[in-house]
Amino acid sequence: MPIKITCPNGHTLKVSDDMAGKTGLCPHCKAKIKVPEPVAGGLTEDDILEIISSGNQNWRQQAKDTSGLDPMAERAAARRATEGPTPPRKACPRCNAAIPGGMRICPNCKTYVAELGEI
Image (cartoon, rainbow, N blue to C red; front, side):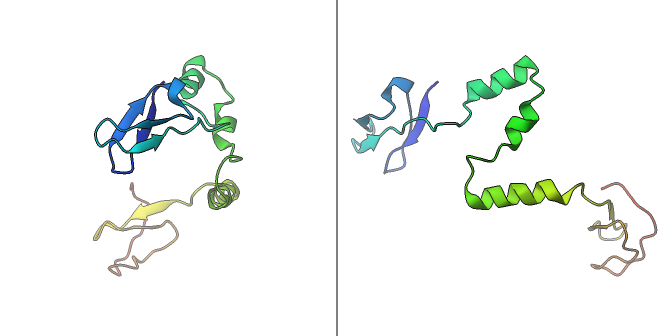
């Protein structure tokens, strides 16, 4: 699977896997480019296609694995996991603003909203 890289002058290139870790020249501007090594533990497109096509039921757990993420992304993933389902929302018939399902008056246009509607 080709590796996508960008030279210092902004040219986007695709190089073969066997070039990983090597240095070469951009064919457009002749700038030196170091081809990065593949990230350990990351999923490639082939891995993703294999998960999808095999019908693997563990894909949800694999998708939830945040061990390779930066600290901010890990905190966001942990917060999403503890928040639970989102509360119902409704649309204001006058301004179409999405408002929480428990509100009876739209905070945007002050219109009375009696029931839940489709958003």
